[in-house]
Length: 144
Picture (tube, rainbow, N blue to C red):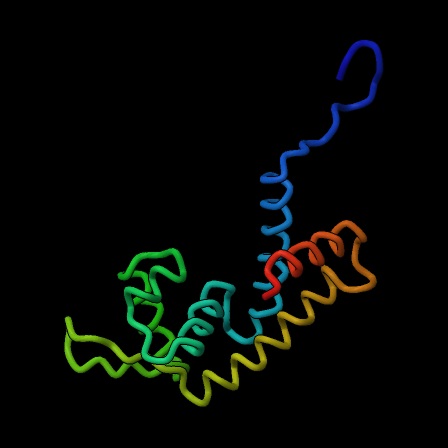
């Protein structure tokens, strides 16, 4: 605050900080919506990658999810243990064929509904107008 007035300094206007703050809020909302499905944003992302890239390798999954191959192995093992994916790896070091099981596909559909509810709450007609503008800009920027 300055001596001349009692108003606080203006908020940070860095686009990076604003988007990071919003991203954290979105991730918190998504994780809360996905928790009843025993999913996190990270597990949903991995399951989604496996679903849309049949036969994807552990290396490709690591690149797509921005993590290490070791982390992907651990996560895929947990997804397989939950019956959500199958790993048809013949032996260590050989190419993998990872696929979503029917149960995993059903869970993905339920997760899409949870994500849609978060989208509606955060970016729908009754959401903050600024957030609606951000969502519209993002949709336009990534429209094909």
